[in-house]
Image 1: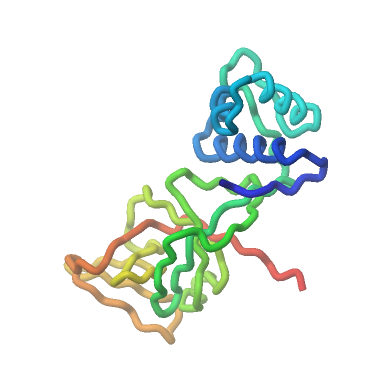
Image 2: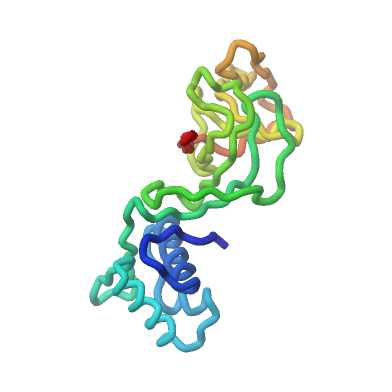
Length: 211
């Protein structure tokens, strides 16, 4: 479950959780949830309880209603709202790293940063992609549904380790290239069973050091 939202107007915990749920559904599915779905998510048998929370969120300026629709709840997304997202592991921009099976961290992204339901976040570890302006500590958005094309940055599992590299296919050979001359290109036969392509890096999110 996603964590708390940072709000300028104080909300109760359940109001924050409900708003978080609405934003998550709206971002991932392109449509907001119904009252029935919200009630089921939070274990309410009486929808009037949910309606009271929705009314409070509307009065505080975080929701607006679209009349005559079953999915009528629209979050009022401003850059003051940050949506917590899970970071599912670290991916090596350097020497391969062991894959983490569960979420290792979470990060609060501005609500305007859209992440598809087929995408997830990984944290970059290492500096083999620094010449492509992908740095140690960056968060990479990985989409598993995007077709992999030559030249794309991909996340791959190589012999039970995770790497992010530029993907190049040359005939029967696959090259996983770094963007740093200090690192060698990984060359593999395209039928190599130890290679599994996970998805394409479609975006990078970086938190600047304020110090």
